[in-house]
Length: 145
Image (cartoon, rainbow, N blue to C red; front, side, top):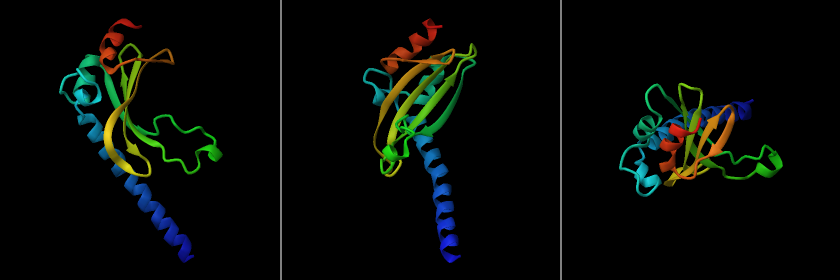
Protein backbone atom coordinates (compact mmCIF):
# COMPACT_ATOMS: atom_id res chain seq x y z
CA UNK A 1 0.00 0.00 0.00
CA UNK A 2 2.81 2.43 0.87
CA UNK A 3 4.49 1.67 -2.44
CA UNK A 4 1.25 2.47 -4.29
CA UNK A 5 0.79 5.74 -2.39
CA UNK A 6 4.43 6.68 -3.05
CA UNK A 7 4.26 5.89 -6.77
CA UNK A 8 0.86 7.60 -7.06
CA UNK A 9 2.22 10.69 -5.27
CA UNK A 10 5.25 10.85 -7.55
CA UNK A 11 3.08 10.49 -10.66
CA UNK A 12 0.87 13.36 -9.42
CA UNK A 13 3.96 15.51 -8.87
CA UNK A 14 5.26 14.76 -12.38
CA UNK A 15 1.81 15.46 -13.87
CA UNK A 16 1.58 18.76 -11.97
CA UNK A 17 5.04 19.81 -13.19
CA UNK A 18 4.28 19.13 -16.86
CA UNK A 19 1.64 21.85 -17.24
CA UNK A 20 3.99 24.33 -15.55
CA UNK A 21 6.80 23.30 -17.93
CA UNK A 22 4.44 23.49 -20.89
CA UNK A 23 3.16 26.92 -19.89
CA UNK A 24 6.73 28.17 -19.47
CA UNK A 25 7.75 26.75 -22.87
CA UNK A 26 4.74 28.37 -24.53
CA UNK A 27 5.43 31.75 -22.93
CA UNK A 28 9.09 31.61 -23.96
CA UNK A 29 8.22 30.59 -27.54
CA UNK A 30 5.65 33.38 -27.87
CA UNK A 31 8.35 35.93 -27.00
CA UNK A 32 11.16 34.54 -29.20
CA UNK A 33 12.24 37.19 -31.71
CA UNK A 34 11.55 35.81 -35.19
CA UNK A 35 15.00 37.12 -36.15
CA UNK A 36 16.38 34.38 -33.87
CA UNK A 37 14.43 31.73 -35.80
CA UNK A 38 15.38 32.96 -39.27
CA UNK A 39 17.98 35.49 -40.32
CA UNK A 40 16.60 38.58 -42.00
CA UNK A 41 13.31 38.63 -40.12
CA UNK A 42 12.56 41.50 -37.72
CA UNK A 43 13.43 41.58 -34.04
CA UNK A 44 9.76 41.06 -33.21
CA UNK A 45 8.17 38.49 -30.85
CA UNK A 46 6.79 35.42 -32.64
CA UNK A 47 3.29 35.99 -31.23
CA UNK A 48 3.17 39.52 -32.68
CA UNK A 49 4.71 38.50 -36.00
CA UNK A 50 2.21 35.64 -36.41
CA UNK A 51 -0.76 37.88 -35.58
CA UNK A 52 0.34 40.36 -38.24
CA UNK A 53 1.03 37.60 -40.78
CA UNK A 54 -2.37 36.00 -40.20
CA UNK A 55 -4.34 39.24 -40.28
CA UNK A 56 -7.51 40.37 -38.55
CA UNK A 57 -9.89 37.72 -37.30
CA UNK A 58 -7.29 34.96 -37.00
CA UNK A 59 -7.09 32.95 -33.77
CA UNK A 60 -3.79 31.54 -32.54
CA UNK A 61 -3.66 28.54 -30.19
CA UNK A 62 -0.46 27.26 -28.59
CA UNK A 63 0.43 23.72 -27.52
CA UNK A 64 3.40 21.62 -26.52
CA UNK A 65 4.02 18.38 -28.42
CA UNK A 66 6.75 15.97 -29.54
CA UNK A 67 7.28 17.68 -32.92
CA UNK A 68 5.56 14.67 -34.54
CA UNK A 69 8.48 12.38 -33.77
CA UNK A 70 6.74 9.48 -31.99
CA UNK A 71 6.19 6.49 -34.25
CA UNK A 72 3.25 5.07 -32.31
CA UNK A 73 5.18 1.83 -31.87
CA UNK A 74 6.10 1.42 -28.18
CA UNK A 75 9.01 -0.88 -29.07
CA UNK A 76 10.58 1.79 -31.30
CA UNK A 77 9.73 4.74 -29.04
CA UNK A 78 10.83 3.23 -25.72
CA UNK A 79 13.78 5.06 -24.22
CA UNK A 80 13.83 7.87 -26.79
CA UNK A 81 14.06 11.46 -25.61
CA UNK A 82 11.61 13.22 -27.91
CA UNK A 83 12.04 16.84 -28.89
CA UNK A 84 9.79 19.29 -27.06
CA UNK A 85 8.10 21.64 -29.53
CA UNK A 86 5.81 24.57 -28.99
CA UNK A 87 3.40 24.70 -31.90
CA UNK A 88 1.32 27.71 -32.77
CA UNK A 89 -1.82 26.83 -34.69
CA UNK A 90 -3.27 29.78 -36.59
CA UNK A 91 -6.94 29.47 -37.52
CA UNK A 92 -8.06 31.86 -40.23
CA UNK A 93 -11.65 32.98 -40.71
CA UNK A 94 -11.88 31.14 -44.06
CA UNK A 95 -11.08 27.76 -42.46
CA UNK A 96 -7.44 27.52 -43.47
CA UNK A 97 -4.83 26.91 -40.82
CA UNK A 98 -1.12 27.46 -40.46
CA UNK A 99 1.32 26.06 -37.96
CA UNK A 100 4.75 27.07 -36.78
CA UNK A 101 6.67 24.67 -34.53
CA UNK A 102 9.67 25.73 -32.47
CA UNK A 103 11.92 23.15 -30.80
CA UNK A 104 12.50 24.22 -27.19
CA UNK A 105 14.41 21.25 -25.76
CA UNK A 106 13.46 17.63 -25.08
CA UNK A 107 10.91 15.92 -22.89
CA UNK A 108 13.60 14.40 -20.64
CA UNK A 109 15.87 17.46 -20.42
CA UNK A 110 13.05 20.00 -20.44
CA UNK A 111 13.46 23.48 -21.86
CA UNK A 112 17.11 23.65 -22.90
CA UNK A 113 19.45 24.87 -25.58
CA UNK A 114 18.73 27.50 -28.19
CA UNK A 115 15.18 27.43 -29.59
CA UNK A 116 15.07 26.58 -33.29
CA UNK A 117 12.46 26.56 -36.02
CA UNK A 118 11.21 22.99 -36.50
CA UNK A 119 8.52 23.38 -39.16
CA UNK A 120 6.15 25.74 -40.93
CA UNK A 121 3.01 24.49 -42.69
CA UNK A 122 -0.34 25.63 -44.04
CA UNK A 123 -3.50 23.53 -43.94
CA UNK A 124 -6.23 23.65 -46.55
CA UNK A 125 -9.22 21.32 -46.42
CA UNK A 126 -7.41 18.97 -44.04
CA UNK A 127 -4.24 18.71 -46.16
CA UNK A 128 -1.02 20.23 -44.86
CA UNK A 129 1.71 21.64 -47.05
CA UNK A 130 5.17 22.58 -45.86
CA UNK A 131 6.23 26.18 -46.21
CA UNK A 132 9.98 26.37 -46.99
CA UNK A 133 10.82 29.35 -44.78
CA UNK A 134 9.14 31.27 -42.01
CA UNK A 135 9.50 34.45 -44.09
CA UNK A 136 7.29 32.78 -46.77
CA UNK A 137 4.32 32.30 -44.45
CA UNK A 138 2.64 35.73 -44.83
CA UNK A 139 2.73 35.60 -48.64
CA UNK A 140 1.58 31.96 -48.66
CA UNK A 141 -1.38 32.88 -46.45
CA UNK A 142 -2.28 35.71 -48.85
CA UNK A 143 -2.04 33.68 -52.05
CA UNK A 144 -2.72 29.98 -51.37
CA UNK A 145 -6.39 29.16 -50.95
